[in-house]
Length: 113
Length: 114
Image 1 (cartoon, each protein chain N blue to C red):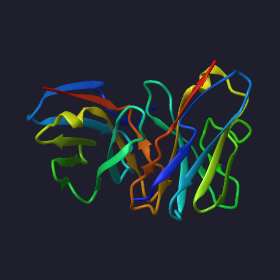
Image 2 (image 1 turned 90 degrees about the vertical axis):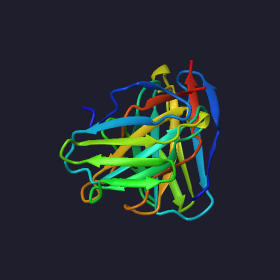
Image 3 (image 1 turned 60 degrees about the vertical axis):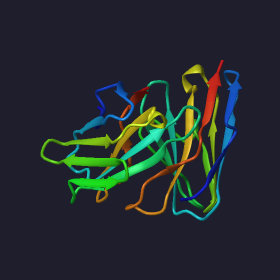
Image 4 (image 1 turned 135 degrees about the horizontal axis):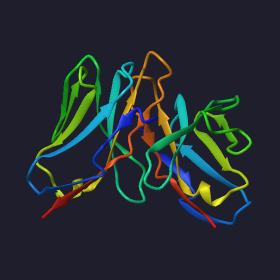
């Protein structure tokens, strides 16, 4: 049973526009959420995180939004750049429980010139 | 964040053999984990590598198949034993300083079993 779901396997966005990657989760105990970026032949790289006490966290071009009632989070990349083409993984953990970080299947983002 | 070096970066192995993957971190870390990413799948936690004691395995993973060592706070190994083609995956070492910090990953070991 997938606790963290990324329902879009891929997404194409024009360079300079906004990229929005979505993630849903089922476990209401999750209270810490993370986004990772992965290039081929490299390990995942941590991008940004958000605690459940917040609904938004911003770091440069990357913003993560959390909607706890909908059990939904999204990553916004503005403006999108060619180097943003990669696979993006959403992840979550329940810090007061077993705290394992659970990952979604990833969304492949293509930035079009 | 810590620099995590994983060896080998890739290997092609025969069915029935074993491969040991090494993970070296440039600083002492509290928590080390081993993940697996099968083709088209998410990253799945295999086990938590505990310093000086037996690893803690997730459901579906057993010590006989994936023995793990962690002799100190900067080094760990994962062995994939008696390999079959189903073990073809990317194996990733990861570290974390505490429960309020993110995981950081090595570059992974791409294993192909023929």
